[in-house]
View 1: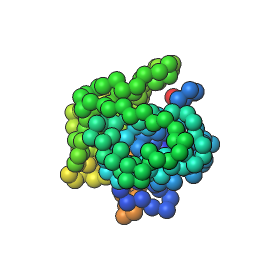
View 2 (view 1 turned 90 degrees about the vertical axis):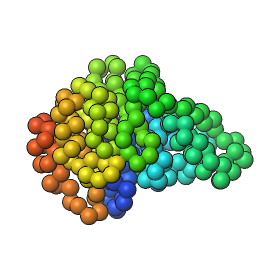
View 3 (view 1 turned 135 degrees about the vertical axis):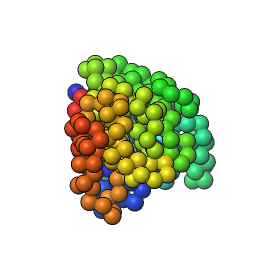
View 4 (view 1 turned 90 degrees about the horizontal axis):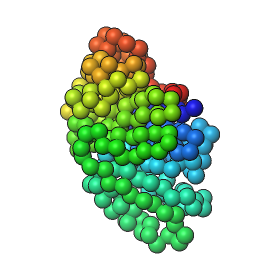
Length: 251
């Protein structure tokens, strides 16, 4: 049975108990990591996986709370003798910046490095970035401070779906991306430039006719988060949960 694991739920300033936002989608044959923060090997072990389980990595945008863990994760996999190829999906600008950082570490000179395949994703709506027997993964641009992708994942064998807004202001692109999904994971940083409040996330979920809303990327350091659910429920009218680290959703 495929499932989504909330690997981290905090906004840019993480805490002891909640890591920066990143997600993992686990199937029988493929495991997709969405964004990459620090200490990935330890985090994977907490959910019963190792680095060889990860087949694909999606990078939503080039902000450090979403991609800073990439060099360390790749080095750890190399030190653990990984041989399996890793597929990395992102906007071309994000791939270019990521490779520049890796080149600063002279990663191409590390002997016996495993194969990393980079796949550029266009900045167009509802682009089919990856399809397998289990998943169809679509990407769409959202409205953040810099070019950023939201994702829609359709679980083909069980006919269920989820969408992830990533960091974004309220926008119709997310409404279209999340249309009719069983679960919408939407950020709730606050009503500020490039971000959304919990109430705005609820409004997006209502417009998209999502079955359920999970709030993520909220301020864990300065806000307890308990009131966010009530704010989102008032504008959504459907079930709302506050995403927490290691929370699982089965499909």
